[in-house]
Every structure is written in C-alpha cells, then in structure tokens.
Length: 303
Image (cartoon, rainbow, N blue to C red; front, top):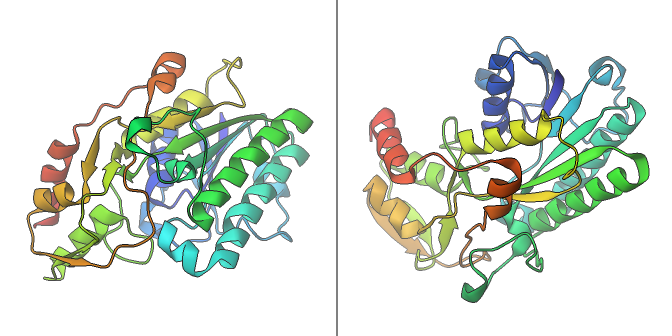
C-alpha cells in the first residue's frame, strides 16, 4: 500500500514508518522537522519537508495514489499548549483539517488519527480504568485540539465517506523518545537531567499516575486499523493503553537518581486505560513489560 505518515520523523511516527516499510509498504513522510529528527528518517521513505498547517501548500505530488494517511504530526505536551494556545491551535487543528481536505480532494480511502488520553481530563478514581464511553473533559488546549480532531474525523466520515479511525494513546514510551527539548515527556526529561548530572524535577508530590504504553504496541494498533480490509468499526475510537499505571515517583525510582520536587502543574491525577475494546475488536494487546524496558534503556544510556 502507498501510505503517508505525517510527523514521520518524530518519535512515534518514525517507528511506524519503519514497521510499514519492513512490511513491504511504500511510505511518504510529511514532516517540517520542527520537533522530529533527520536521524529518525528511514532512508527507504520518501520525505517531504512540509508544514501540514500550511494552507497554501500544493499537495498534488504528495497525495496522488495514496491509500491511507496516518496523521501523527502535532505539537505535543500539555503545559506548552497552555502557555501558547493560539500557536498550538494553528498547528494541531488547522494541520489536521488540511490533511483531511487533502484526503477528500485526492480520494484517499482511510485516515488514522493519533488522539490522546488527555481528552478525558482529570478522571475520578471510581472511573478508572477509563473506557471510550467516559465523558470527556479536556484540561488544556492540547487536549481540546485532540477532541476537535476526533470530531472532525467523524464529520469527514459522515459527510465525505473517508474511513476514519481515532486512537487515543496513553503516555507513550520507547525507542527514540526524546531526552531533551521542549517536547520531551517525563521519562525523557528525567533521563536528560541525569545525563547532565542534575536531579530529576518532579511536579507536586509525584504520586500522579500514568498508563505508560510501549511505542511498538502503539505502532501495532496503527497497523491493525490502517491496513485492514475490515470496515464495520470504522469511524470508531479506541483506547491504546497498557492498562497498568505507575506513579511519577515509581519512574524516578526505577531510574535511580536524585530527585527534587517543585510546584504542581495543571494535569490529571491519574490515567489508566480500559483497553478491552481494542483487545476485543482489533485483536490488539500490549506486549512490553514497562520495568524491564526502563532498566534496559537506562543501561543503554549509560546511566
């Protein structure tokens, strides 16, 4: 199949590109390299260094003959979106609509959207693990943009017949996760601080819990929904989470460095996926043991 991966030079996107190519697919990467890395790009992929939010871009050469688009390009992370909501809206919402419009124009069959568990907001203990039926309560512009993206996907399915699927990722970790930069996630932040000989900075008491989900399992979910001939569940939403959460303190203790605490930030107290829908409908399941992976990663980094 001929596939587009937007954000294909990023952490999750580049892992998906590698898998698609290994499976014999033709892959086109769209990435402006603002947060992705040239070093992540598979040499067998076709690369277009383009900003998906550029409304004036001519997509003719890129989208012609494409079967499926995996839309992963976005500005990630909650806290920066709170500080700069307009910029995040432009990249995350306008970029998504541009990609859906290109799919409509060039008659691309399927669109797979990388959404986020952040759409659930702060979930009470009694509602954990969280199913796809849970009421949504975004707590940040980033989370709201993911919800808007889901709604646009449904609309483009209803109005124009594009087969859309939304995957809500829970705190992805794995190979190529960043250890530096503004878009680094908690595990990468801790590792980067340790590599610089600094203590790990923990927001609040560190007892906030996250459902850490392996990037290879996220890639597998994308393959299952993007390349299947099955259509009965299209325009659906699936939680893609390990179903096992750990506290930020747990992560810090696994890495084993010095810690300091700072003021809390706006964030959910806990995330935990009810992944039964993905298991039952897609035949998907998590495969990676979190603690084993972290221990090996720590050794690989020389920590």
